[in-house]
Image (cartoon, rainbow, N blue to C red):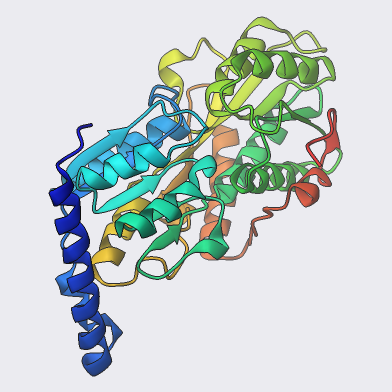
Length: 359
């Protein structure tokens, strides 16, 4: 990224102020939505802690933002591999490069992004802070794949031979908690007698592949032969564990991933994944900016529009997939309601902890 001259930043701030004054005057006389057409979008930026090669959080976010930028004819400004530390300077650089919207694609950025967004007068999107949404300035997109995770629980319950399932997480952010809870609910609705072993790698161990392998091996040792793993980079360690360890019953251990599709690196143990499609989410943000609705509502993932879906791998028997599809239809038509549980304590209460999560 290159930083333009200071006068370009000054011009950007002046244009924002003029737009704000004009928009306020128009809204006063004609209604709040009347100035929506005045919004001019030129570039979409996304910033993320890791490189977009994880078949998960970083890669899905990157590819969705790139697709949405192309869809709306916007310049694409990616900033990847930023880590989890202070990103104030990177935010300023993206703003000075002309970003019309900055997607801060990590919970660790949800303080710095609104600060720099206000300083540079650039709308920002953050995660895990729904209460911090601010019309026209900050939109939270805390995502929950709980509907897909419920189906994953059904699939796991119909697959296990040891009657023990494992849930391994790289932290306990709201998105992970809601999926963990829904997985447990789907599994127990299918077979109430199942044991579900829950383990946390660390408070923010998203890229800890070694920790992912170590903790997953301990969960397999506790009897689990289907692992539901939520980890970003740590999920590669989880996958290594299931590929190299047998279950306590002597059989294969299966892995159910989240967010992306690791089929290209599957060695025969990837049963499925709760796949997120973020294109509808980021598209909605652009439409909201154009219509003066940005920051006024959440952005759900749902089975109904395939923004979340369960991966149909070659390892799933036809009869089992048919049963899963029947449950999917019940969720879509509303006869089965799956409510998200974002609280870590409530999510843990649905399972049997192997290692206590952070307090």
